[in-house]
Image (cartoon, rainbow, N blue to C red; front, side, top):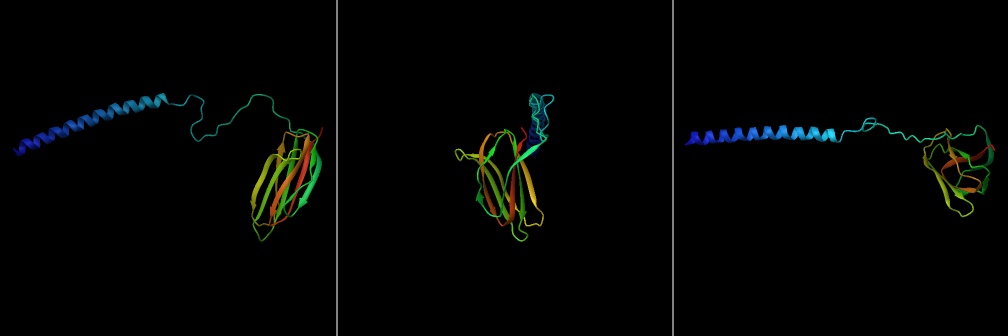
Length: 168
């Protein structure tokens, strides 16, 4: 009786192995076909590669010469006087001189003077203490109106914002 029970278990085990093998072959074939269906089209970058957007048309010309419009300086927070940008293209360069013993904070926003609406939130930086000045440039392609800056500065030795417009 025990031998018959063992034979039955062996047969059941063999049948289970055959079924598992057939399922593996069947599912492996389905997975391969699914992989072919979702394969990336030719020319599409693989995952993790950078996708660069190409926009047809002419490249914008950045003017070679700039005219200084105004300079604002300070060490603390302030709203500046308004200034007029006579061209569509303009830029600002801001320079910070940090405290050497304290972590500073600098935030710069540009507002339209006409209706006090936010034009650009330029910077919101935490500045580490260092004897070296820190500077950045930003370019804009919408002008011919009055603007002003809202500067928030904490624990900085000084800041300077220079505004330029493209030469007409």
